[in-house]
Image (tube, rainbow, N blue to C red; front, side, top):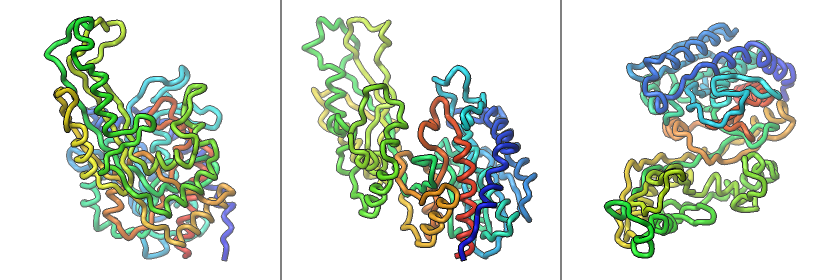
Length: 470
């Protein structure tokens, strides 16, 4: 029998205008940067402060028989685990994180990373959308299912504090808690994106990533460019030639065979559906200057590029003086920081080796080329969607948003998803979140879209109930 969810939806939304908003506002003020960005995170105490605040709020919630534990392995970031009995013997794992990216420059004058501001139904500040909201959404969804007498499986809510550093502490906790976690049949991850704010989006894949430093050394020291140009190889020409070996200059696509892959037909079908839903919103969310065009006019191809193509980005450069200090001198050496996104089903180790080899072989003019600090993380592809979960997602999205659920691959990398996929190979996955158009996670003016958070909370509750009722 079809369940009426309207009262549930209303009650899931109500706390967001009061208690949850107050808690998130306080949380945003805490500069609990992930360990990769704050080497003294433990001594500074911000991570502990944020975890204590989250745990205190959870304890105040009307969740029946909830067991709350904050685990603290020596030298590792803390982890919050909520164990909530359910109406069935199965287990659902709900995931979020509380660590944050660094400040980043470029915030509007009235906003700031640790300066929360509500404006136009958006809560601005670092970490609200990525990913502080997650624990509030998960617990509020479960509390309201219980309030309305609606079934849910046993729920284990896991909130870590090292995700923005690659989740390096998570494997130790997964091993520590293996018996308690058991074998979840459904994993709900609340740390992903949404193509729009008017439907439930589920992420079906994540690209992997390779990164490292490329060094080019040409001469022992710089000399007058009037004497050297036309005789000494140009660093710009050398780097251009090397990069042209590994990527297409127009699109940025990596051409190394080991980085290429075949896109499954089912994925292409999902991309077609997503392109139809997104229309031109997909391009409009990017802060392009007026008149600047994307690399392709076909939004379907752009979705393929973002989710399933290997792409190169140069994210840093050393050896080039600022303009005010740039004299007429040839540069003896230059270094680039390279970031390569690789397809979800690509072997990261083979891709990295093939890419490194292409950079190093037959250096132009015999210049000295080297690479350092190269590392990789493989991507992730969700298992085939079970019919019950597809139906549950549609039911939840129609009830909370008025539209069917939508699916797309994310271009970013979320290391813990591959971990959870390996740990629970039989589980179904709902990977969703509030990081939609212009929400700008990791950048300036990050915001949490509050109406989306309310509806997503209700959608998660409905999926949990449909899972228990199936």
